[in-house]
Length: 141
Image (cartoon, rainbow, N blue to C red; front, side, top):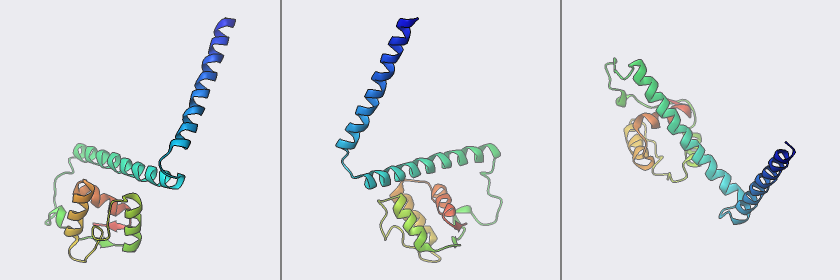
């Protein structure tokens, strides 16, 4: 029993040393500074979160059978209604998705479908995913 405790202690020490060396190597060899690394990590986490949320939304929508459109107007044609500052939304979109340009985020009232088309092409997301993201940022359909 005493030998098992010694072996366990050795394994624990070796594991902690490995973790410490890994962290030190990561800090020393990181190609970006801390702020850039944190920003990139946040962008990637936000994208992953968006993908998970859209998948869950699709699954629940399929389960509920809510894919049917009962209104008189097709869902894609609903107008974008702003409940906040478009500049705030643009700033948040640029922060979360660094590849977006001013042109990608140009919003012209009455031409919402063009904004959605640009974002869909640039981000590789579905219209529903983009609508949900914008809705989460104080826009509603």
